[in-house]
Length: 280
Image (cartoon, rainbow, N blue to C red; front, side, top):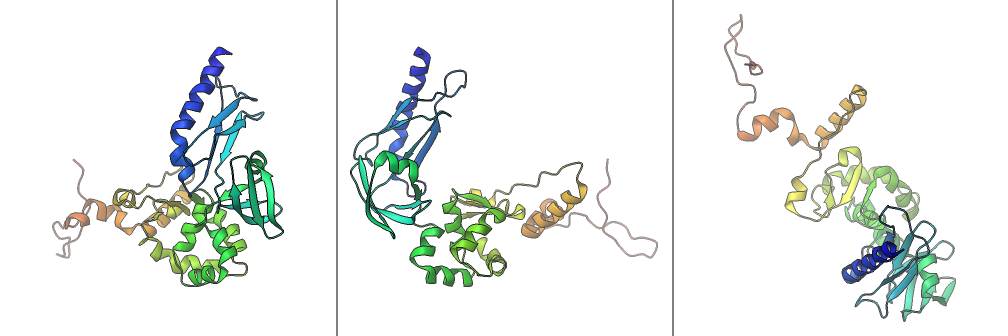
């Protein structure tokens, strides 16, 4: 077990080094991980400690049967959810116990260890929190086709999701709303929002972006399956519809101010025609 202890020690050192920026983030507010030995086998029953300036005192977790552990940041004011009680907030936290405010459990106290297991931290700027705290604003944003709705929905799911994965969350946030109309109305506005990465939107995959120009210009070309030509053609059509600037002719010629298929001699009727370049 000497090597296993060394592995856990290294893991603890890593957590100590990354805990401060991770716990300070509003986006996730938790660290998940798995402890393994040098062969890759999981190690259950191992004590893992995380400390951070953002924590009142170090947090200690014991890995489960799958070797997994989970640290949850629960500072006062944090939004949390419970499978039975719904959405609530942390009122106080001293590192050992937390006081929670749920609609049916106001002032409920829970040990920090139990809270880590039974609660899920929600981003305060996510869709679910907005739907509960200010549904009128959410409805206004949705009717206007505002990208803020998609950005908030992606924050709730970790930053990446397909349209199909987002649909049930949108339906729960604003029941009865015509979300198909929202997607149509917001499509062009998505392209103007630097918070979104639309490089695979033609696959209906949406991501939160970093807002950099390099990321905005990076486009993932479709990966086609040789045994599915019809599916491949449909994918290419969707790709070119979303990214017309990537149309082959424009890529090789029009972008440089010239016709990609230059004119050559006329045919029998004396008219000039455009032809693809002859191969050598």
